[in-house]
Structures are given as C-alpha cells and as structure tokens.
Length: 174
Image (cartoon, rainbow, N blue to C red; front, top):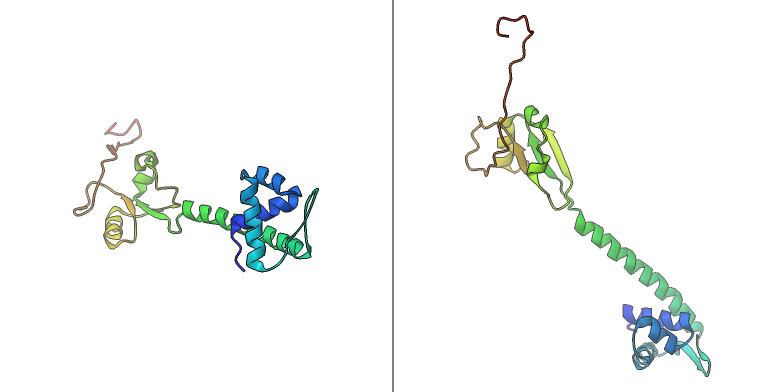
C-alpha cells in the first residue's frame, strides 16, 4: 500500500464533503482529478474505501479506519513542519561575545547588527583574554581596548572611549 499526503488529504475532503464534487471544490481540483486519486488509493490498497450512491459517497468501514489514521498522520506532519521551521530559525549554538568591563557599560549592541536571530551569550572578559579566546575559537566576537595586540583578527572601530578624571571640587587637580 502506498498513500501520499496529498492523497490522504483529498480522501479526508471527500469524507467530510460527502461527495467527490464537494471535495474537488475544497481541494481546488477537478472532479476527474479527485476521482482518479480516490480510485488510485483503492487500487493501491485493494480495498473499497467509499460507498458510492446517487446522493454522494460515504466511507466504508475500511474508509473510516483510513480517515482516522489519515487525520493523525496529517496532524503529525503539520507538527513536524512547525518544529522544523522553529529549528531552522534558531541555531543551536549561541554567538559568544566577550567584552571588557568598560565596553559592557556602553550602548554598543547596535554596532554589531544582526546574528540571524541566533541566541547571544555576553560575558565579561579582560581584553587580553578576549583576544586569546577569539584566536582559539572559544568566542565569536570581542570588544576590547585598542591597546591590545589584535593582529590577525578583523577589527571594527566602535568609536572613542574617552576617560575622565573625577575629583572633589576642593581637590588640587580640580
């Protein structure tokens, strides 16, 4: 026996509509195409699935069994498709971003752009350790001081990082 998903869907439409014509309208197919699909199911299985009458069709006992299983199979296929879409959208491995403490205090996220909806894991790390982690493959992105040796790594200037001296107003340096 060979049943395709389309054949099962058409069969369910026939059972629900109670006629080949009604099923053809639901499936947006011709009456001849629906009739040929049902005939193919019956020939493939060697079982009569529908009782045909002047007022339409009704599933035989075997047709009721097939309809019950077809509903379960098609529901499972829909769940599988939904799960696959979600699996495609979210990569399993997060993008690891290491940044020094000064960088974590700045609004830099917009400079990094999108990571194809990947989960992002941000960790604090001294600049020297971040560069070592990037070279070893333990991190994907790093935000470091320009005072560290980052030769061999691609870099993008995120802007100035000014430092200011803060002292009480009465201090000699004020």
